[in-house]
Length: 227
Image 1: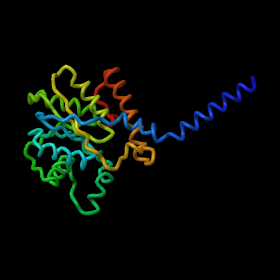
Image 2: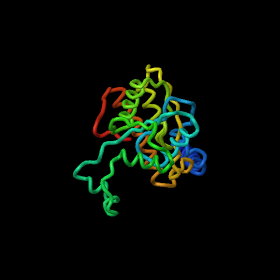
Image 3: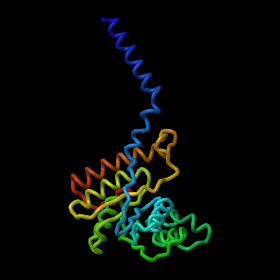
Image 4: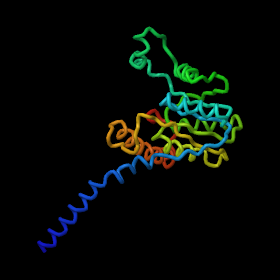
């Protein structure tokens, strides 16, 4: 019996050692799951989700200039809490700049990438990816648009596409997707940077939360939603 336990222990140590030694061949999988292959086609509009402004707007302008769509729709987050407004706008204020709204920042970003305000539309204020999907669906139905290209960032595409497909179910609207790659992240070696680790964990939690809260419990807009 004692010899059997020793053999089992040796086998377990051996397997654990192999597991550790070969980490480069499997440890990338949690990040790989979150990546989605681009599926781009001509559509009625390009939808730019909030956050990660530089990469997402840059990609949207590239798609627009390439003729994939004639309209760009952008979701807008609420203005920051009044009591924390000075904190959020500190970077502007120390340079003597005036208060700048989220919409102004977005328009300036498009201007930076040589895209004028023509054909750019904004949704109502939203506080989560789920809210974005609802707002975009309402916009699409109101304007009789039948297809869109969803533009968001590296790790967010999986969740965004999942939420949009569930929200748009039975509408007949086609959803294409295009990832605006964020150069700050490295999915193939995500364990080497804290920002990648935090983002991946956050995305898995957010996927589970969205499915359970919005599509099982059928809850709608909440103040604690996350993008």
